[in-house]
Length: 529
Image (cartoon, rainbow, N blue to C red; front, side):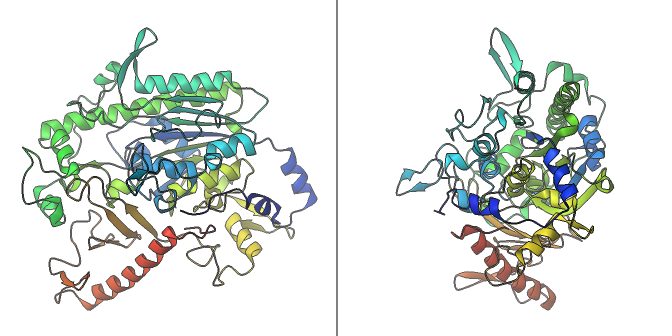
C-alpha cells in the first residue's frame, strides 16, 4: 500500500510560482474563488453527444456547453467500471494505488476485505471542504457502497443508486428527476458566503441490472426517437465476436448464455435488431433527460448570478459497448469502453480556446487535480494526474510573455528530465501521448477476464496479447499479431508470419507497457502519469 498522508501539503503550498507583476498579483487576489459544478453521468460513452457527431441523440444543452468551453475528444478512463472509476475520481489515483477493486469490499488480502484504503481526509470532498473551505455536496450515485467519510466530508449528501423508478416521500420518482431535485436543493440552500463544489452523479444512462427492460426512461420521453433508426455498429457482427480472444468463448455454455458477462448482456440488449433499436432509443432518451437536467441546473446558477464564476465539468465514469464485438457494457480496453465525453467550461479559459476541441489524452485521474487547483489547492503528492486547465489557459510572467501553465511548471522544476523526475514522460512541459489501462478479473476469467493495455493514438497493445493499428482499423477488429501467436516459456510471442515492422512495434510497445505498469504500481508518492 502506498504511503498516503498530508505531509507534502505544506511543502507544495510553499513552492514558489513563476514571478508575476504586482498588478497581476493584486488582480488575482481580488478574484472570487471559483465554484465547481461536476456533472458526472454513468455508462455514457464518448459519442453519445450531438456535438460529437451523433446524428440521432439530442443533447442541445451539452452541445451548447461545448460551444462555450472545450470538448476533449480523446478523454479516457484508466479502468472502465463504475466503482473503480469513481474511486479514481475521489482520489486522483490509478486502481493500482487506491486498490478499490471490488464493489463494497475493495481488495481481499488473506481472505479479508480491505474496504476503503486511502485516507478519508484525502478525498476531493474532504480537501474541498476542510482545506479549501468550500460548501460541498454530493447528489446521486456514490458508486462504492461503503462510507468514505460521506457525512463529515460533505455539507449535503444524497446517495441514489441502482434504480430507475422508486416510490418515496409519497410519490414515484424517476432517478434523473430525483438527481435533479437533490442538486437543486443543494444549490438553493447553499450559503452565499462560501464557494461551492457539487458533484451531480447521475445514475443515467446505467441500466437496471436484472430488469429485462434494462433502460426505463421517463414516460414523457417515450415520444422521442420513435421515428428514428439507430445505426447498427459496423463491428456488431458474429465475425467480430469470434475474433475476440478464445477465453471469451469457453468450451461450454452455461444455460442459454455464455458465461462471459459482456456476451450475456449483449443477449439481454442486442441479439436482435428490434431489441437493439428498443434498447438504444431508451438509452438515448435517458441521455436526453440528463441533458435537460443539466439545463435546469445551469439556469439556476445563471439566475443566482454565479454561472460566470463557476467551473462546469461534464464527464462520465466509463464507456459502453452498444453491440460492438458482440458485447454489451464495459470493462475491456476497446475504444467504446474507455473513451468518455469531457466538456469543460471555465471562467479562466482564454478566449481563443472557447468553442474548440482538444485531442490530447486526458484521463479520469486528471479530474481531482483540476478541481483542487481551481479551488486554490495543490494536488496531493499521491495524486497521479494533471491540471487540465493547463490545456486552455495562459499566464503572464514578469517579462510580459504569456506561458502555458504547464510550461510555467517546467521552468519551476528546472530539470524535470533528471532521473528522479516524477513525470513518466520525463518532461512536465509535454502532455501525455500514451497511457496504461488496467482492469482486474471479476469473479473468474470466463466471467470478466482481466485486461491491460498500452493506449496510443496510432496503436494499441492489449496484454491478451493483441495489437491494433487504430489509424487504419479504428474498430479494433484486425489483430496485427494475427492468429500465429505462440507460447515461448511464460510469454506469448509473435508468430513467424508477422512482418518485421509489426514485430518492431510490438517489442517497443511491450517494453513501454512494462514501464508504465511499473509506474502505476509504484509506491513512490510523487508520480504523475
